[in-house]
Image (cartoon, rainbow, N blue to C red; front, side):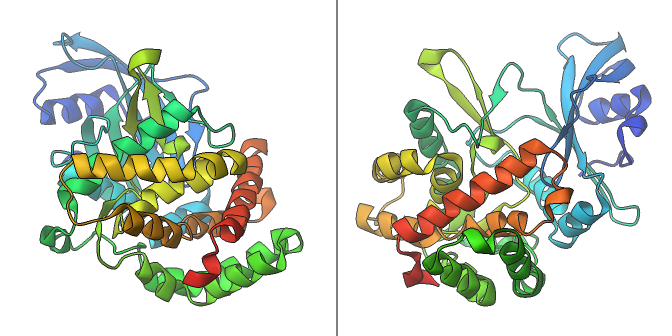
Length: 364
């Protein structure tokens, strides 16, 4: 973690601040100006991102002309949840501890800062433009889906059943701040989901949702037993950047706020259940699990059969319910616009279909 003061917002990201950050990364530069991209500040579920254009007074050769900063949400409610669940902490710790230990493609890391007293958090990363973010609502091509499930074994395989995972005290097992999350699902999430969507759920789905929220910790821990590894735990199109020519596409994986120890297929489940339309998931999921398993074996994992992988995928397919139900419990007036409201409605529909298709009653 950097020694440079943590900015409280975009206005604190000055030329002097950026100069200090880049010098801390070994670049002998003097920044003349930092300009946020006009109208490009994007709201995510838990925070904002913004592209920053950088001009140099000295030493700009080879230095980045633009970077991307992530800052906390401007909504006090959303920011409060993110802080309690340690989402901002986890992402910064991931970059501090794992950025140089993983081969999965992630943006270059320039700065991570935590100021708990002022509740300021900031992450500064490589700008991956012209790569574009995936579209959870619109889904993707089959080629991109295969690319996604073959990329994540680069994260899983090196940490498969690795005893060193337990040495990272901050790294959550299954869910950040599980005790708080358990109470929140029973007392806040379940009532909120039923208020917003209860009349749209089938009796089967309603029963699964009620048992999941009432037995949250028990269900989460099932997904975190052996074989366990390092997982993204929110692996969906909105957290992937696609770049490169059509015949050589590449994925960059972003948003590591929910990084956790769990069974590897949870990341395949997040992708298939949340990022694909229900029709595409039904058509492709068997093959995608096979592609994931094949890539996992190619990365060096042994003693893990395709049958075990498929069962773990079914077990972990309840995992996307964690963020979907939490998101779907939010009052619709807090969605901040039509896009997030459409996303809320899309995710609850896809999770509901998967609960029935994959017989999730067995696991809750």
